[in-house]
Length: 240
Image 1 (cartoon, one colour):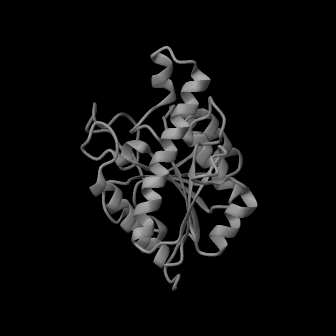
Image 2: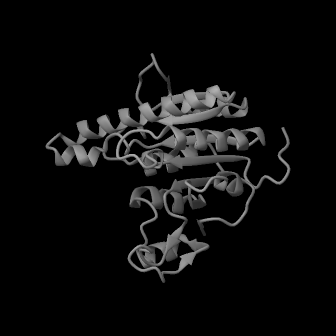
C-alpha cells in the first residue's frame, strides 16, 4: 500500500450518530452507512491507520433520557449501548467491503466486542486493522467528544477529525446569519475568546493542553475524508 501524498498516517475520526441518520428521523440510513464505509475503505487502502470513535445520538442520548426522568448515569450507559449498535453496523459494512476491522468497547461486553485495552488497540492499528471504539470512555457524564480526544491521545493519532453535518467553524451560526465568516484555520485561544462551540469544554481543554489538532468537516460531502488525509483544505482546523 502506497502512502504517497498522505498528510496523516494515523487519524482518529469522531463520527457522530447523527451523521448516520441521513434523511431519517431515527436509526441508520443504509445508503449513508455504505457511503461512509466506502470512504473509509479508500483511505485504508492508502495505508492510513484509522481509529473511529462513534456516537449514538441517532438512537439514544443520555441527556434525552434524563429529560424523561431516567437517572443521568443510567441514561448515559443507555447512550453508550447505542454507540455499540452503530459500531457493529459499521463493522459489518466494512467487513463486507474487505476491510479488516475490530470493534473495541469501553464497557466489557465480551460476547460482541473486545474490551478496550490501549496496547491491544495499538497492535490492531499497527497490523493494518481499522478500529471502531464504542461506549465512549465507559464513564457516565463524559461525552463521545471527550472519548475521541482521549483515545486520539492514547493511540498517538496525529489529528482528531470531527465529522459533522456542517463544513467547519463559523464566527456565528451560518443558518441564522448566511453572511457569517467561516474560519479555515483558528487557534485554541481564539476559539475560547470567541466562545465558539467546537466540542464540549472537557474535550477541548484536553486537546488544547496536549496540542492535538482538530479538523472539523462535513461528512455528508463524499470524498471529504480522503481529502482530509491528503491534506487538502477542507473544513476548519484548530491548532496552536
